[in-house]
Length: 163
Image 1 (cartoon, rainbow, N blue to C red):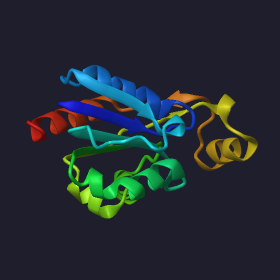
Image 2 (image 1 turned 180 degrees about the vertical axis):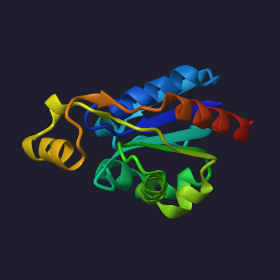
Image 3 (image 1 turned 120 degrees about the horizontal axis):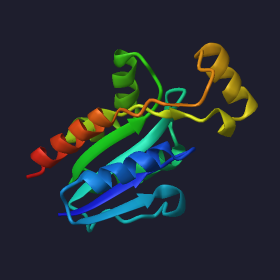
């Protein structure tokens, strides 16, 4: 099955997750595409499309939102997986962020969805982001919160559902 893993990233975490998924999938024909450099990417030749983005203050990157809106009709004919990266610790809020990240009909149509955690690289943040991270979130040093076990479950769900 021809598979596209399409992602947007700000600091590289979503790219790391997209590449991990590509390595673990049992499909042979996989393209990993960053939307930043491919905003007009054509999903029509693909059987499976996995979309990933990072969430900041409840929103994913506009590039991914716009891509989903422009391609919604075609995406709803594909086997879809959706994931987001973020550092929200509360499970209920993770689910809400995931559900709100993509168009609702695409989210409801997806074969697999996952909130897979994220990373904080304090050195890469601007002053206001660093203030929010250290003062409001209490994170004082760079850390990874990527949940590879959840990514593996996401991969298994997608593979089982697309057989």
